[in-house]
Length: 277
Image (cartoon, rainbow, N blue to C red; front, side):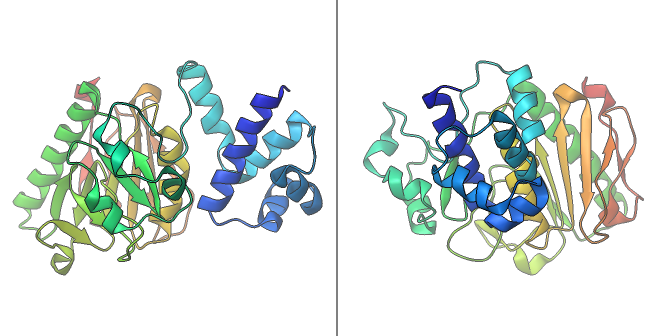
């Protein structure tokens, strides 16, 4: 493994260790790699760690299979962790990039960004948001239509929203998200310009640049913030992975052709996206 590749892998492993708040022992327990070895690898004390060790640690962090899929589906994609310095944008004069990636950014920094720069703030780190594709928009539009129709027909009180709409997920100064589609049932959470607290249902439509966060980082955030149900819609894989955190069970996978039950409504509402393909 050449030096540049090793440094990139180390940066990735350190980054997700910090973002997922995992200890060396946590990683050792999940990977089977001795804790002392994990620490030496991640601190750079081991100069030439075995590729297998890197893969085992990636597996423990929950990012291994996602990285493999990204490499296969989008081999030219430049992996990004946090906020990048992109020349030619008006954000250059407003962002301290070291702070942006060290978890020190706050809502003050978020609101100071130029209006044309879309980012999410997760635990004090900025993440650029790519422009949505046509498929992304069609999925959001169809799912929103079916949810709104169900709520209207049943005189429901929950309100669906789509991005761009800010969600102050943890009710603190370090996190502000823009889920692709979400449903809020507690009206007290709906402020004039943002949602204050966790939505009941969140759907994220996967893109190459968002894939790692959707499957790993956002999954962790949503599971630990009070979100009741989370869907990852990965249309390139014809996959809808659903989590119902209230039951604390494994995810259930569907295809876009299936009638997918919405668990916050006890399955009385089902979403079918087969017409979009």
